[in-house]
Length: 138
Image (tube, rainbow, N blue to C red; front, side, top):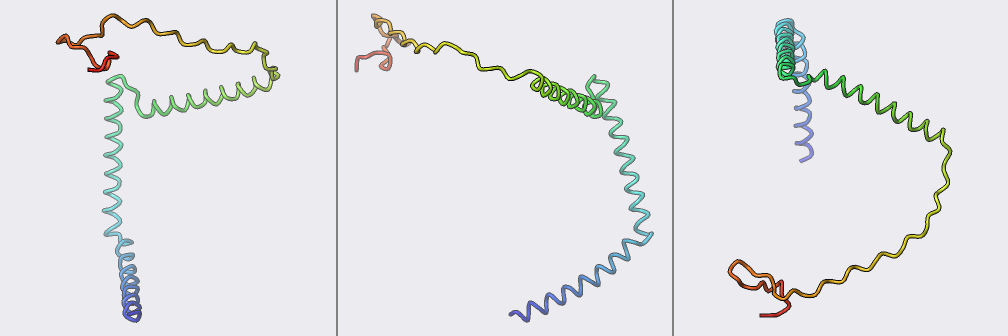
């Protein structure tokens, strides 16, 4: 079984090497490279035109474009960085304060007692008493 696998692998490797050499020579050929380059150039021009059209549409609606959003995000990150730097400088400039002495907290007050039971239990639309709302069992 192992010999069969080894022969198959050797045959596959030989096929792969021959195919790779042939494929490489075809891909380096000007007959393939020139049309592929032209197609890539056309695709990039179409993408540029599409991006410009989308930016104009967003601007016509009064919405920020992707570039505007990236610029605003960059400015926001700069402001955040400056704020963090200022906070660090402030912490370094102000000496640590001693903890304040406070009076011990009073024990929590007991919950207020419930009011006396109402004379009649709440009723449903049909005038029937709700079993869950009364202490009496049916």
